[in-house]
Image (tube, rainbow, N blue to C red):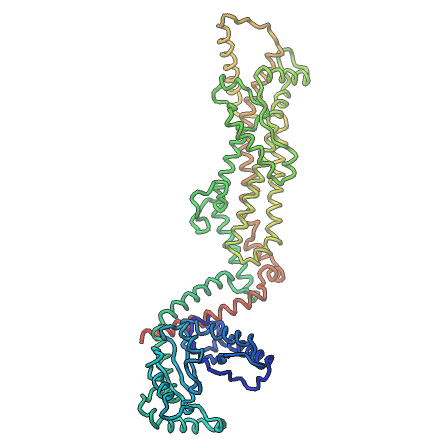
Length: 602
């Protein structure tokens, strides 16, 4: 950052470029000078070979074009001058020649434009020997040098150049000639500190010291900010991975960090800043970082979906008979439609083959009629008034048909959540290049395998569900008796009505009602069991408990070959170069800040 350093810019009133006789050579010369200036001033805090003071000798401003100086050359030089003198930390050494009227030398106009109060401009007058002694012109130049005309806070200084025929003389001869000249009138009456090259050297040194004292606090703040950015950039690169030992150490630390975060998320321990919630209005389904909370939410939704949408048919009268049963209200029907539409966004072809449908509303009589039909198709050796036990299984399989789709949708939601969570953990714990390689070499395949094993487990549970009904639940018999009592109570109430007619005995219908009530009781028990077994044996066993090992573990690293470790953790060349650049800049900035602290303490 060149702006963090003090620059002295000397702008000469003429173009001092030797042998630039053509427009092309002048243009190339200007470009060459610009390149050298940029090479010497860019990224100064990051370069160990730059001093605190940079002296830039810019080409002089061209007043008008000619055969060797084009309009493009004029614009280029002016842009170059503007770029430097507009910097607030640049001290401008405005060099003007006494050969020409100073009012016509445009560098003074440039300086007033960027430094109207003359706070950071030091005027330097050259060729005072070209002035005729005792003339009004000489007096005007002396008034200028004494800060009586164009006032500058830093004042003016006069130096005498070598004469045209004396260009090969030594510095000693040049300095002696200058001292002799300034010993004469009227210059001997001027303050010695504003005359000659030696005084200018001391003046610039003092100016630098005073300027630095004023700028050090600001420079220190800027360096601190740059150093902070450098630290952050280095932190983003992660630890160095140049050697095999660094690579295996980096992978091991990464694996431990990944495992710690994943296990904390599974166990519901949210102390790490990774789990912080920035948006207080985040919805439960989008709370992916807090994985356990997210899965608990989806498990709860799965349970509610099973209770609401799990039946293939719903008995409309049962709300009156049993207030605990589900009632299909208009609001709930809208929820059913909304949930059914979620399958359209699901990418699982297995799920798409089973479009969800709303439970069909039927009366109890219609349901009993269907049970009678099933009994007739399943007739065995049972006596009249009884039913084949397989009827319960047939009715149950029909009623529980939506379970498969509900469970598959739930499994897919949890698998997607786990995938997004793993992506977030890798973003947190690994460098981008390692994440990309790790995902391609292991994580993606492991997540797919886990989802596949979960589906296989779910299929085994569904196969068990569709086998012959088996239950040892004490609530089954109680629920059968409960349904029977509700039915008897309803008939007793109907018997007290004046228009009640005792129906003829129908042994098949009586048996169908018993079978239907038995299926209803069995459905209740099995639904509770299915919800529990899916959340435990499918979700927990295959998607949650194994998640830490699906990413990367220290054991994985221990079993890797040297080539595999190099492939995963090897640092790209551009990252190595970037790291070296940042480390060099950090060292330089730290040394600079230490120097500033020492300077301020004096």
